[in-house]
Length: 396
Image (cartoon, rainbow, N blue to C red; front, side, top):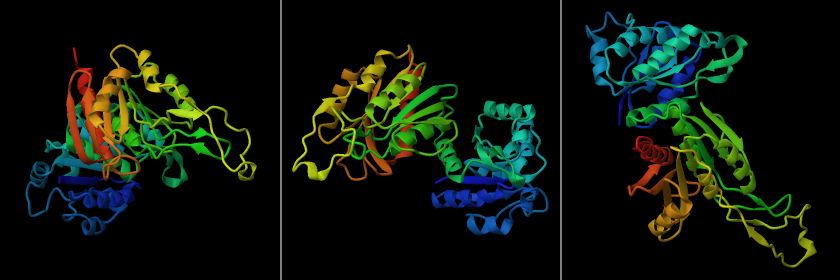
């Protein structure tokens, strides 16, 4: 796995660095913590050393290595700074290197992930926003802070992202695909629709929405503004707006609205092919009949309808869950639905499909490209799908 430097700045969010450190080590990475002097007022070097792969470092001078920043900068694959204070962000943006962390960042060609943490007033400062834009221009990956409790009982934007969010940014940065969705509007659908039988019961499927959520998250990490139309409440993630729906009809209405002007649409939801023709307005009592006959009617093909209204230059991706003849069915759907890409998986395969954290997929494009990915996490499958799609943005 990768060699990572975890820089810890001076802020109350420094306590979250402990959880981030444990997560990175648990993922198999070799982690060296670097604690700033300000950070030492919030967390101890011994705590970081006890959890890390290597001892925590802090001094630019007085160490056995006369040039620790140069050797350290050359030895790591990625630098993650969490929390990154306004002071550290200003140093990185303007080439100031007066402590071990800032000097190492200057002396390294490694990827850099920065997770800002500060009060809302500081976050909104023109100087901070200018410096952040400079870091983006340098190729740094910025993890947007969230809205929530801050120091001293305040509430606002500037709260450092959760360790699980930062970890995903780190994993995507380590892949180093050289792609960006910055400035793109991306719409993702997720989960299985529920078609009501009565106010209590419904017809549904086993889709958990995990693959759709992974696609939305990774698209956001790559810089997109994402709308996630989902049947399963997923929780907050930076740059992802969640639109909660239930039935196919609701999903169709939401997607028609959200996809207007979209650059990329990923239809990962498992939409019911049929709905109950006349749902009961009240609960159907078991005692009312020995058997129950339900009349079904076809739901509209949401994806096919959306493709008809797509804007020029946009990319549409469909998903297909199959149980046999995967590629035959995938090619048929690629043509019939008019999409640019179809992604399919065999849901009978162990570790793939519904409710699993892993997946195996075949990807086909209308220009004849094909790719197969086996037994990857759904986040890595998402990155492969989005990498595949990003190439189409540059097509003539």
